Length: 112
Image (cartoon, rainbow, N blue to C red):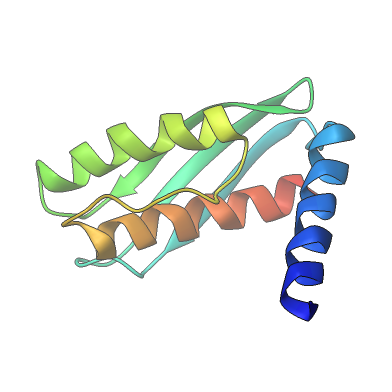
């Protein structure tokens, strides 16, 4: 019963946030992370009209090929979902963690 109530409350909070059209403050935000394999990973995120419209990697020290693939897969997913709550790329969990962490920091700034 308590577990079921937890799921219901979590679902309602998601509905409230998405139903209210959770918006971000327009502007350009940056985030960085050292959670990857090879040092710093950083992004620049643009918010227009309260929505994330663009994210670019400004520093990417990850393994060439793998790091680029992860960025190419995850950044569009963040824009689509308007959230850093996305799945990691299989086989590239550390690079995925760096991307998600950096984007999450930029989103935190935009949500204030």
